[in-house]
Amino acid sequence: EVQLVESGGGLVQAGGSLRLSCAASGFTLDGLGVGWFRHAPGKGREGVSYFRVGESGTIYYAESVKGRFTISSDDAKNIVYLQMNNLKLEDSGIYYCATRFRSTANWDWPDEYDDWGQGTQVTVSS
Image 1 (cartoon, rainbow, N blue to C red):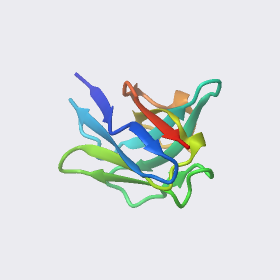
Image 2 (image 1 turned 60 degrees about the vertical axis):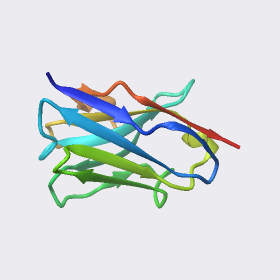
Image 3 (image 1 turned 135 degrees about the vertical axis):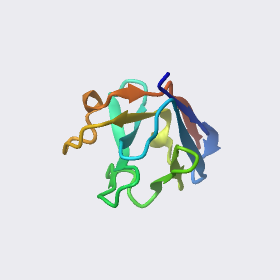
Image 4 (image 1 turned 180 degrees about the horizontal axis):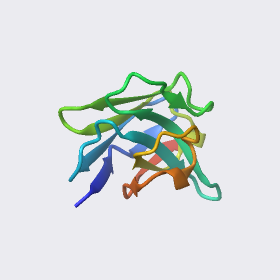
């Protein structure tokens, strides 16, 4: 069974850090595009970051997180991480990881993805 499981969310003060994990089971992440999205109340699902595991291609970040968030992978563990530093109130939301086979330019379009995790809540407090 194909499954993506996010973890690492929680409550953190503004300026703090969290590291989210996206663990895959039933398939390998190698060669797939993996995106992190977030969904805040009253907003649409926003693309946060994206890259293709095991490839030396471009890594994408939303403008709002550039310089603060870093996407990476542990290929041996079949996990993708999202390191989030200097968190801001507006970073709060449910964070999802998603995978896709295709390699199109629209990395931040949710409809371009095939499989999704259940999400992990991130709450940044003042």
